[in-house]
Length: 334
Ligand SMILES: NC(=O)c1ccc[n+]([C@@H]2O[C@H](COP(=O)([O-])OP(=O)(O)OC[C@H]3O[C@@H](n4cnc5c(N)ncnc54)[C@H](O)[C@@H]3O)[C@@H](O)[C@H]2O)c1
Image 1: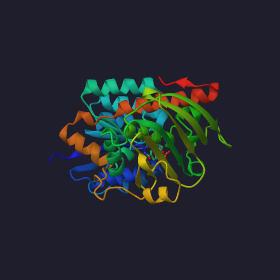
Image 2: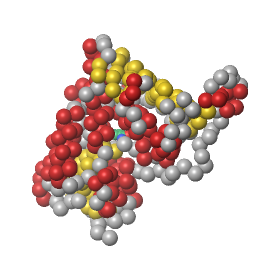
Image 3: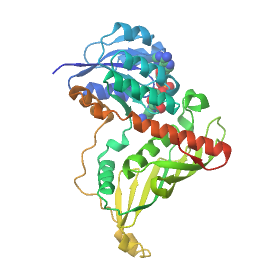
Image 4: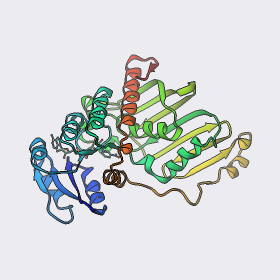
């Protein structure tokens, strides 16, 4: 098996778990690390198993010098476009942390370059790879919920208390919508198989220059409506509810799934309570990690594993949400 040589660009908080994931993946190794902050570079280097990686503070020099197969991009989002572009143009497969880009045109440019170079461009969206969400997507695609009639999602976590400086910068995709909101938007698209087409939104910054809270109304393909709320201060909780003509699916932050058949819609509690038992099948598909998914695709040359189109859809919805909040009106996506 040919070894996959991995370069990692950006050795901040996301680096540790990425290095760990490469360490665990047979046939791949971290061959090079790059960061402009020397202590972070040295700290990351200590986590690498096996042969010592080369260390660099200059990404362009690293690309020119090292013979890498793939690059993991873990820098602040405003840097992703030029860095991913340079890596694709150098002939590397790229796994980039979300958000891929700060605007949709940059995303389109990267997708075109990846196709032209015949390389995989993947964005690390971990949730849709988890067994429970793959199960939920299949359930909806198989028509088990009937027609989807209403879709809602709410997420809270203590984002406000744990943000890096760039996360508070509106020019750098700061704010909770680009961050946790991006995960939720992508998850809604993937699980429901339906895209968000129009939005209205209120944002509250609290004491930051970017939004800490956002509550929005959504219109999906086919005209169905829904809601999306991201709460940047509070406990880690989330829930996605998809109401269908045959059944309702409720997914939550501890990966529980509840399926409530339409015949129980009339029941007031406690009858409804009894019917809302956890109906997650015992044999969910296994969880897949973004790194495992990416490196296996690189090994097999599976270009279908590129998912950057989804990141463009997320960027378009995020842009529309911000515009809707600023202009205080409903805005079409794209
Ligand atoms: N998928 C997730 O759940 C998840 C979780 C955390 C972070 N992220 C994403 O990962 C990315 C990084 O986030 P983080 O929390 O690690 O940020 P961070 O601020 O902790 O780390 C970023 C690192 O990039 C380095 N850097 C900045 N400019 C550079 C340059 N020109 N060349 C080389 N290095 C440079 C910084 O010195 C820093 O060490 C972001 O896109 C973020 O949204 C995703």
